[in-house]
Length: 228
Image 1: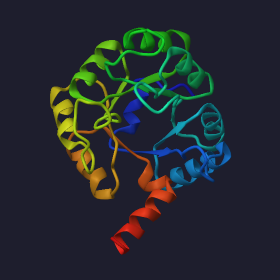
Image 2: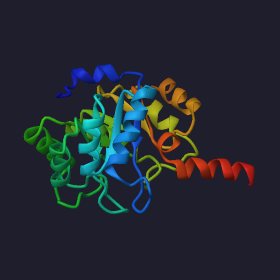
Image 3: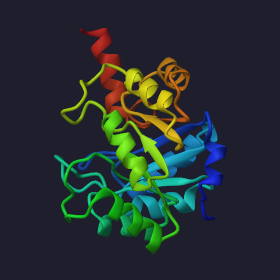
Image 4: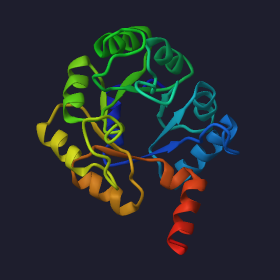
């Protein structure tokens, strides 16, 4: 299946589930990722977002919905699919959409965001999701040719404060500008109410990860509420 920009329309107002585990955790296994992804699809996920080449491969065999893939390399600065090499590897692993750092920061390989997007489009069939941290990032990413815009990096760069829940103000700002690309809400969406608020703020679709697929965090929330 090749996902086209036209095909993205099927994701409107839908839930995308991010299935990721951190290094060293018991669930950090590509087979487990695929199983969690399949479970999320049973629950109604219209697409899946996963990290790592093997995770993309296993998830592609486990589900029949679009897979958004990324490759985290590092922990600071530009580390979400930071170079064209990373991006093409994710595409070759089978991702329908490659998620990349969509901020205006310098990239490790020296390429511009536009060069990176163009390289992905010319060397693969994958679409590109730009993980942005601000309105200016979103505008720049659209100009660079990205197919989807995400608010993933809001609160993780120096441009915006880290909100307790989703950055609704940023969503509203981008949505009102009507940049012509699907706007994906991602980041700190911890409750069904948050997801609804993100749609109401103008999001095209909503990504939820930790609140659905990270047992350690969810358990910690409950324990913290019981023993503040």
